[in-house]
Image 1 (tube, helix red, strand yellow):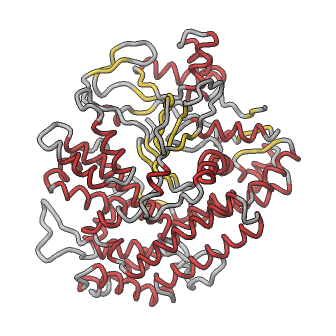
Image 2 (cartoon, one colour):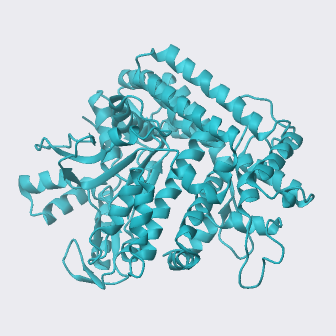
Image 3 (tube, helix red, strand yellow):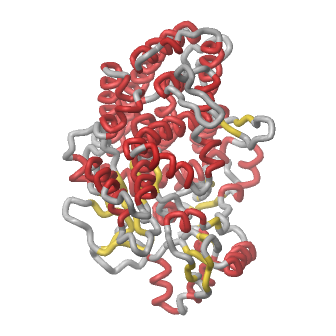
Length: 577
């Protein structure tokens, strides 16, 4: 199934898709998530504590800690140099979107993703030869290559591949923040949540590796390691990860061995350094840990991590100034880039004044309360009615005739009133960037090969480009639909012993069946017809299909039938207005 919670790096918004709820829980998971997403953290924690002694306590704590995990990503993406490099993949395309669309209209056809224009073989096969689009594709390709080099994985003996690059470091920081949050509900609850996770091997591989690294470097109290349990000191681990994320990019002078350029190379150098010294073992506070690691960076890379951060902030200021000069001060893209810059300045000032706020695990609640990433509440079948102070998003679906209907909504007025660090700026411009500009940017960069919380977002981006009079042609490698997936997450949050197949109404025993997401049902005309006929056919069925992008829980035979129909129909490689 689609992720129920995910920070979108293009907009720095936390997207929430309603969870499957236990029948007797009366919507408690959604209530807890909603409170935390809207910034009411104490109330959310209180709601979890009210569930002590019930079957839902541990999983409600898990939901709350997952929200805090994603909100931590907002901080680290906005503040660190690696995070900004990730954001600029989207913003560099957004700044040049007008010229890209003009070139596409002149050419008549736009090949997606645009990286095809810079690849000799793919450009020939796909007819992506327009010289004005070649530079757009080359810039996107170069940024993706840099990110790809940082995410290169290694395979430990007898273990699956593991990456410890920038993305993995962000996830490790989010996990450390999340585990500190869980411990406020007691060690027993924290251990229950960790032991109850549906895919514990993946969690260990993607999130817990930093703790094992801390053990290997000796970041633990004396006599705190046994065969059964180990205690890792989080501040030195967090300090090393944060210094690794202060990468140096964009034409700056690098170290002779290039170790200053990528997060994974910086981590390698810092680990090697601290294997040979006990300096970090002697740090007793987060402030001391950061000062030690910051000084080590100056020795290893010629700049402290703090100096890297300030240099990157200057780079972002130049980027925003160029965007303003290129697009004009009234441009929503230029204005919103300035909003992000101001938010980062606030975070940088907080970090320089008090590094422990971001590094000390016992201050997670204070950090979370200082920021306000916008939550986007989604409903694939649509909301009817939007609360006062909320902004409706994607409210003009295909064939929609209901004036108060939308696929998503955001409490912009409430979030903006907290006085915390946010990236809203002008609410109308924020909504334009979220619903139109950034979905188009993501389509240009990744085609249909992207995991969206709200499936109509991708289709809407395609419709926007079609309205520009552009025919869309997709690289087959970036248009493969996602196959039916495991229903593990559904069963984890639901207490049902059985469910009903959304296609044939047969009974699915607990743990069985597959999830099929809404995008899969739009892969080609064959599967679209199959679904409409399941609705009964005719105009009413077509209208329901256009509006309702819900995932389906299906039995194994129906899952196989979905895969067969999708395969028989083949990939949809072109769209025309």
